[in-house]
Amino acid sequence: MNIKSLLLGSAAALAAVSGAQAADAIVAAEPEPMEYVRVCDAFGTGYFYIPGTETCLKIGGYVRTQVGGRSDFDIDGVGRVQDAGYNTNTRAQLRLEAKSDTELGTLASRITLRANTNDTDRGDAFYLEETYIELGGLRVGQFYNYFDTGLPGETVLHDAGPAAGYVDYQATDTLNNGIRYTFDGGAFMGYVGVDAFNSEAGWKTDLDDSQDEIGVNGLVAAKFGGVSIDVFGGYEFDNEDGVIASTLTAEIGPGSLGIFGVYSTGPNRYWDYSEWTIGAEYAIKVTDKLSITPGAQYWDKILPVSGDYVGGSAWRVGLTADYAITENLAFKTTVNYTDVDIDSGVAGDGDRWDGFVRLQRNF
Image (cartoon, rainbow, N blue to C red; front, side, top):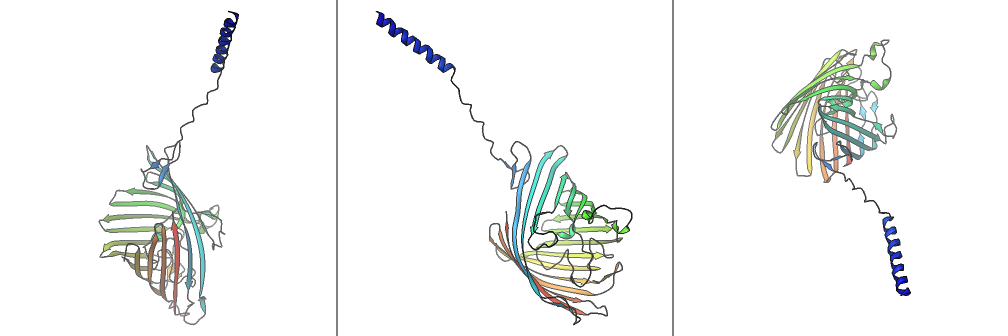
């Protein structure tokens, strides 16, 4: 009887201890569900939501390596203005774009970082390229103007002159701080804007009229099926001269024809290479991977002197080939011949061959 009571008492004590331990046991918390990156398709391909926000981010850019060459540029035996030679360059560009919907329209921003190994002015560190804030149609920041966009070939020059190295150009500015408003109606679009040229040069004061480096510009454009046309106008207050330019593209036959023309009232920061120019290219789609683009351009009155163009002319012909090696890896090469007639009483004709080969990986 005593043994039975002892056994029963021991069992009860063990049960009590076990119950107390069960009550005091530490239970591990359930892990928080992981928030995976979500694809954002509201603004096109490549965007994803920044975790925890409704902002869509896109990361892109390219790595490019290029070798270029040129022949001597000798103006009618009066001395070589440019020696023959070659140059090499590797460029890296990183672009971040963020967009989100607001009650005032799409809020967008862009940050572009770029570096060139042979950029002696900036060194090989990354520097700030096109970077801006945009809300609806209003854009403020640093961005390119019309003369940086061009036809697909490398013969017709939008932002360079035929006699570079001989004529002391002011260096047309295509990337500036500014403000622009764009209206996009689908088939029709246009914008008006104000540019602050050389805005990185420091404080602007009223002590020097040459610091009045402000320009106004605008564009209207239309697209009808395979045909598109735009007309650009700009006026620069420092030089008190303006420019009108237009680009027409049309799908014709196996390729696309592009025509570019400019008329300038005098040298200014939008255009200071000639009184007028006209150029054309025809991009031929040979295969799904290969396209060939022959082109030609003519400039008239290419000597900017005392706020006017006084004479000279030039023409240029060339051929560009683009080949898609594989997805996001492209090869480009071009060769061009430029003939310059200064016709100034000091020097006469000069000509030059130039070109490059380029490999570019986009991402």
